[in-house]
Image (cartoon, rainbow, N blue to C red; front, side, top):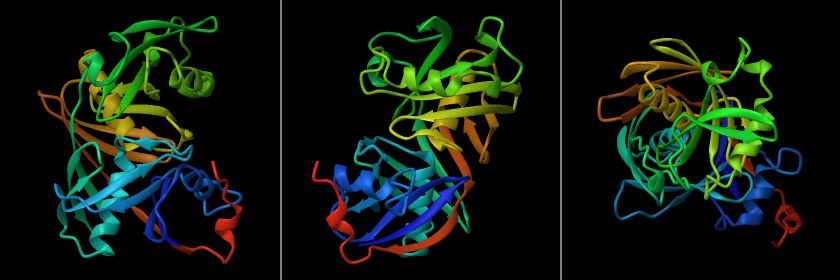
Amino acid sequence: MRLFKAHGLGNDYLVLVDGPPITVPTARSLCDRHRGPGGDGILEPFASDRAGAGIRIWNPDGSVAEKSGNGLRIASWWLHHHRGLAAVHTVDTGFDVVRSHVRGDEVTVQMGSATFEAPRIPTAESVQERPIDLAGDTVVVTAVGTGNPHAVVFLDALPAGPAHLDELPWRRWGAALETHPLFPNRTNVQFAKVLGPTDIEIRIWERGAGETSASGSSSCGVVAAAVRTGRVPPGSVTVHMPGGTLHVALDDAYALTLRGPVAPVGTWEAAPGFAAAWPTS
């Protein structure tokens, strides 16, 4: 097995260059940062008859993600620079088809349109500026779908909220919201502070991965929720995360475009007998 590794602002993915198909146990083993090469997910190419390439996106817990902005940017970078795909191409995730444009180490992805319809996110019922109790703490949540589900908590909506995101117990809240009954497929969770009409700061609890330094689909979800709730106007927004910044453009129809860097790390080859250590279930 050979893998290629790259990251988008510290959010790192492994691309399966060659080897056996990924399974739930192998996904967990390969993403393990102590017993494997480690990563926030795995990108597995597959043949697609509706796009230039197919990429299945695996989470570290062995679940499959519908979409990942950073994962798709890394996949497109690799497809262009290592597989010779044109700079402008389409990628099939198995759930959706997106269009990418690679310019050197910067990749722009047209992420589709955000939705606030409960069945399409999905949520069990409408979750728009909705107070949710988390073991005695009340958070106000707006749910949005960008091809995968997101639950956004704005700092200014919290009762007597602190001035800074890191003063919140956001990791505990993120873990609780990820598996909340309102989200039948679980959810990504973001905590956001609007800095101005074109700037938002966020912290991210990613479904199946936990805390991450950056996330493209989370950035898109936060911007869509901020526009929906009247906190920022449609247009271009810079999203600030611990790993760095991404740029999200959203139009009046809630169509999203994501732009940001990809940093290659290198290749990894499994040692003889590595697969023998994988669990079977």
